[in-house]
Image 1: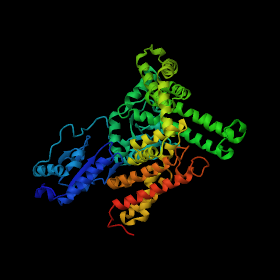
Image 2: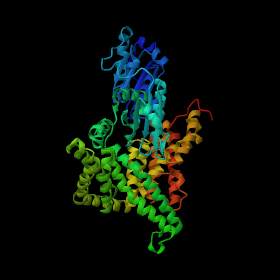
Image 3: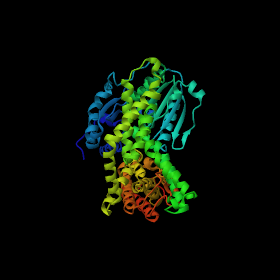
Image 4: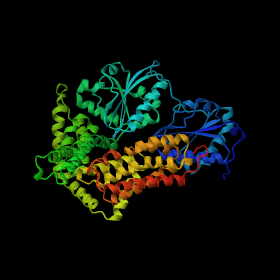
Length: 604
């Protein structure tokens, strides 16, 4: 199969490999599978640890490292080589490992004889130096984790930090800011006694209570993938919160916070912050509208029903909660960029976007304009230090709101409204073929990375259209998001020979997560067998999304899974929607049966 030959000395002891990627999901797993297949062909004992954005899979133990002849590092990013000092180390990129695994293992074979005499030396940059700023004593750490929808990644990041702190001998208290609000909140005494504050969040977090404390910010991925490394980075790079505010006012602190956030985030995080604050308004408004229709019929909003409970509920849901969706989206995008001074111009810009018909697209544009204009003004407007306190409460809101308002009214608003209306008309007038195609695309995106950027992009697009009374993409997105964990759970039940006993137990949990529209329930299965599980899930979700959208199913509530289906008028064409969910689930299960091989250790 390969002309590669390994020396006898390289076969006397096991070889280990570390495949690592900070942001990747499928590529590191594909590289690991390619290396494993090549090692089997060469009858080489190879043990592989995979690190991706889901965390560490099949972690190498200390005994395995001590017994190894050497280590192959497959990564496109920097990897801490301290644990492998004294071992033979060969490095390769992920793409090379996928395309030419024999050549990657061949590099080690060539280096192995020399390594048995003298270990491969690491450069000074690769060997972490002892730092005087890292205290040797056990530290008291407080942390906050948060993600846009506040369901899975919030708690996965919290677990990563808690596990890492325990291993490092530190005490940690983690507050999770999820979809139901703050859980396990930290007290003032805990903050006062803390040596370090870590914020691992993909959405904006208020840091006002940490004034005077050393604060380090990161995304949730860093905590999920390698909590110990994140804590180490926080110890080295944390900055004292509030120092700028004490000298120059709250507006300068906003600019400093933005500068820090730029180290790990960009427009995607700002958009997701706005979406996360918008979702409760969509959920509450959608449910109230559904209840109003249930009580008073589909014409409950008509003046003929004025004063009735149904009419009143419609006013609360549609005229109030839904009316705030775009301003909140815009305002909190600006807040993520420029902190509190950005909220006013962002919300005013969002109100104008709604008034002139620019919808959620206009709200997104006004939010980014408001945030960056506020930062620009804050940078260039210089006042005497005694007047700096006026900037965040008077000067910045006034001028940024004026500029954003004028731009929305005279420059941006009308063109964006034309584009949005064209998209709305296309969505409303879709023929069967285009509906099938769009539904399949949304469905495949929802299953591709199961809570990652692609999934969130499809979800944000679908949820944003609710503000324009376009509900069909949201229905397709939710049914496609439920399909992967439900399909896997069904496969575990029907095709037991394809799964281990542990997998079948995990399938029960996946079923519960699936009915609640938590796609992340499929992640453990995708991590263990990505080349079979991910395509199976994408196929099933694409079919579910295509059936839903082509049937014209509308969903007025952007979350909740099967628990919102019994609510009258929360979803239309309920029968076809259930068929879409069933079809996607069954196709996913059958695809897994076809692609996965029987597991010898599985017990019927």
